Length: 335
Image 1 (tube, one colour):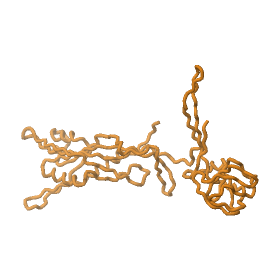
Image 2: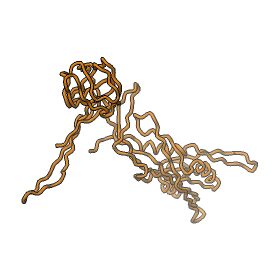
Image 3: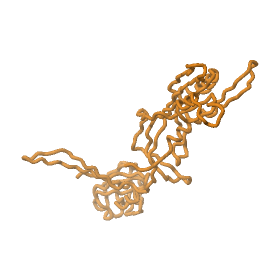
Image 4: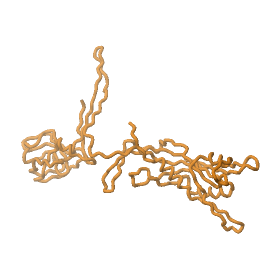
């Protein structure tokens, strides 16, 4: 059942989410409302607790300071299935190559919600307010980011990122030696999709399907008999592929005609299909050079045909020429 594949969808979504907050700046102004300092807020991936522990400890990191504030960190914390965005599992989509040929296919993706937490840590309250106002206006409550979910797919998938809530914490307790850490935590949900493995497209089609099931039981005396039923279906060509012309019309036929006159009735067989123009017919009976036919067969339209029109036979050999994407009918039966 399982096979190795890795589409890097989770990784790509994490990178795309982090890139949203990678260019935030804060500005410090003097009494004349002139900017004297511009600080780009650094962003890193990791849990907030580690950054807070860094503030409280003094590890030997070859630096004269513990950690500069402001600072931001984000973390991927949860992954849940989203049944509201479920699509049919049996549908597939294809990936085309540079020349237009279909090269890969995959089943429709499975919807999952990725939960992120973005933590913002500052020393000054004004720094926190500047950062917060640069984030919140873009989420109403969702902001859509383009993510390339599959390497072979040229199109990108728009992934909504929803802002769920904002929590605030002022870690300013203890003695005067304790350093203040003002922490805002933004919780987001990214609505992404997970794709299964990509497989090569085969040029072949399914040539036969058999379904067996128990139709019930029958008791005869002290013995019970199960009634097994098998339904078999095979694709059948709706037109002639190999150019097997067998005869010609000897009289015009209209939309309502069900008896047609042909040049040689011995070339036809009852209970078979023939083809003229774009119309398929089923031969019910043959008397001399007159065929009694059933029209409006399968997906072919009823048409008018003129004297001299070529008549082709549809045989089992034509089924081998059916290509992927062609229209075709079915022959089936119970046993």
